[in-house]
Amino acid sequence: MKSAAPAFLFHFIAPPNKGVRCGHGAARGLRLPGTDRFTRTHTLVVTALVAVYCAYFSAMSVLSHAIYATQAYDLGTFDQGIWLAGHSDSLFVTVRGLHLLGDHVRVVSLLLAPIYWIWDDVRFLLILHACTIGLGGTFVYLIGRCELPSHPWAVLGICLSYLLNPAVHNLTTDYAHPDGFATTLILASIYFLRSNKIAAFWVTVALAMTCKEDIPLVYTVMGLWLMGTGRAQLGGFLAAAAVVYFAVALLVILPHFNAAGFYRLNSAGFGHAFMNKANPLWAATHAVDPVLLRYLLLLGAPLAFLFLFSPWVLLPALPALVANIFSDMHYTRSILYHYTSSIEPFLYLATILTLGKMSESEPLIDIDLVRARIRKLPLRVSPTALAWGLIVPLTLALSYTHGRYGVGAVDKLFIYHNRAITSPQIAAIQRAVAQIPADAAVSTHFTFVPHLSHRKLIYMWPNPFKPIGWGVKRENPDPTDIVDYILMRGKVDAEREDWKTIAELVERGQFRRIAGDDAVHLYESLVAQPQRDAAREKIRGR
Image (cartoon, rainbow, N blue to C red; front, side, top):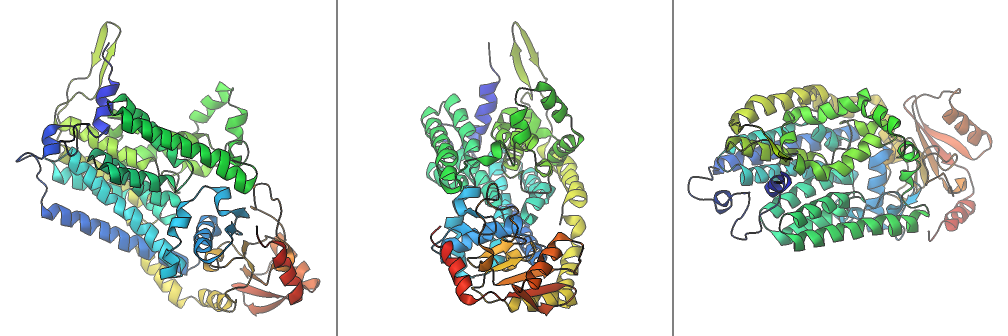
């Protein structure tokens, strides 16, 4: 029986013949005369598109931060961890109440630490994050150039689609996440694999896996593919390396730094799925959830679901997709956040390969059954017509309707800039923040955390007074005497628990209000300095 799998897989894997530079055909790889129609003009267009993306989303990220629209989760946690890695002997992230490697295995934070030796400002991270994701468009272009050397304008259309995709926009403007860096590194590794640049491939694989503990699953599947398509040695090494790193992350690193291991499996992330693992009715009900169906629609619509004609290419995206589907957190089933980071690269790769098959009249479906053959007749369609007549318009429309800062929200760039320089509330917050010493311990509103996270002790209110979102199970909160300042946002509301706690602290003589108005309130500790020093001593060395 002939299997369809090897043919599909071969379209993904860089061919073992070292004479073929990229793609799945000798003509493509060797770039015979007349086959590669790319010119300097196409390269300049891509460069301009990527530059515009980087400039726009860097500005949007920085301005969002300037109006205090960024948050403790996850910019504050990621940012403080990077800063600590370059400025402190402790890697305990007080925004989260866990060690840097105890929440997620973000080894990339250690690699990014030097950026704050250059410019000690979270805006550097925001700009770097936006530009790295924008650079992913370059790798989409390079992959397309390998696969569609005779269709440069189709490749430009796919590249433009990536840069217009609302899921990519929202990944960028979900502020800095290691996942954003992983997306571009995955795309880069795909390109280097297909172009047979094995050293560069291994470098990008290693860097991608440092971003988060789930990325090795992508490369485990990729390694299995390689093993099944004639590159057993490379595939075996890749799968083995990915599995070992994944196991070390979950069974060694996480338990060592949080004493609980991968706690999301049966508590915060996948508790319901874990409890209902033997309940098919629950899984079936979950599968037809309208929120999930809408999520899948928005994932596929920008590319007109053409990637479904190259299904084997989508397999590395399955770990993330399955995790999103069965997570207890409903927001993982939304393109508004960063949970599509290891899915999008394979949607684009599969779409490019589908266009390649259409341009060569290859059968989109070729399946042998027992003594019966089902074969879809070849369909020859211009990749350029599909790219610009279908994919780009769809992506543009969805960018307008579902991109947090897509083409329908360009005016926010000017609105945010005007607010940042003219708003009395923003000015009051800036004055209050400026009064806090650089080495002070601060408990503050979650939108203020990223503005104060370059210090050893920064807490998201009401921590450490009332542990919330701290540690794995709110264990071992820091002593309350450690806090030097409390910075709160908004009007005083005596009915809210936050303000009741503040009132109690003031009434007990632990804090006094020293600045603020209706927009912001700054409180200073009245606890004796020796007592505060003793509180710091209690947590030294963790």
